[in-house]
Image (cartoon, rainbow, N blue to C red; front, top):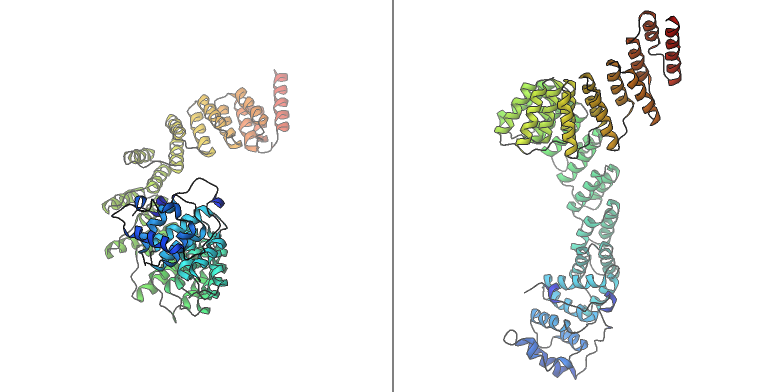
Length: 578
């Protein structure tokens, strides 16, 4: 059978015109017609409805259809009636009461999928804020709706994202004295956008009579924890026991993990201490606390918590070890991290890439590039693939160690393995190449970034400018500055200082003075470093007392007028002495 949505077809009219006013009065004169229709329906599939009903169609009205569906005097199969309903609705505009009668018939015979399709069709036609009218129509057709009918109607609204209407369905059922529809009451909180709205609704349906479910409490608590709203998470947790439900280990762990992520370790330990009379702490409990302690650099406490965990017969998992390794690496205790790493290998614990990346990062920060490279090869033997973070960490480590060739080798390997370099990787390698004085390589990498749509930061560009100026390529340095401006990024005073220093060292004082004026014209104010660079440049061109006079002023000039006056005074004195 094809989906009901495909069978139902209406003329193209505005939504409110698709349904006529209900007229469901049944008279005795309808009985022969209903008998004839029933006989035609029973002939399916031996004879198509189009031919068996051909002589009856002019006499059939929406009222006749509704009467047939409501009373079904010949106990026809619901799906056969649905076939007739689809056929008739494709030729006539039906009242809402006919759709309601068809839906109720399907629900009573537990054809929930078909009834949901029909209700979804109605929702699509009636749109938002239609819950009261559809609820009333179903109530009239059923005599009194049951929670299953309300659940299906609410589900139809949720399918279209009409959450407010789904909430209305639940509230209408309460007004009619019905038991709470369980499926809707459980699903709606997950669809409400605001955590507060979800929590308020769940408490409302609990007061309505819905049986409390610890899973629903845990989900709501987790939402508040992810938002960092631990006061609300605690409120949900406390409500569990107030409603006579036993908190699960997940309940405790969710709250503990939330407190640890927020840095409130004392509150996390307080919750743990209250677990003993309900459920014993598990691996997740200890791992959350260990991770929180490591992030707070309380490594002694983290190690003690680890020992307590093992003493209780719990087996640490990869996440536990990863938290310890990462904590020790970030605290500079790489030797202890490696001990834990070796311990994991001996126990046969499978490390994930996060753990390996933590070790690689720690070794790189310690300057042990040989060890870091060995760990990367080790992770390959474990059928793991280095990712962008792994390679970027290696590149940065090699560059800081002055081994630019190895960093470029890592970059080449990334290309071979299809791992794209991001801004962080390029920044690390461009900075390293610039510091190594390889100006042309740095410029090429900068161009490569631009081709990939990556935007180097100002510090990276300034490093390339400095490398170019050191290599005597001041023209190339100006080119980098122009590239920054074309990209809509105004160089700061630090970048200008790098360029100016290069010009002064090359004796290009006229260009340096022009650059000074240019930066002031675009609103970049020179600082003391700027003037000291210029004074040093001028002193290189002078002899004896003039050089000493300029150097004596270095560190004392902080504005343009003072600088200009000083240079003019020395220039005038120099001319008079000639």
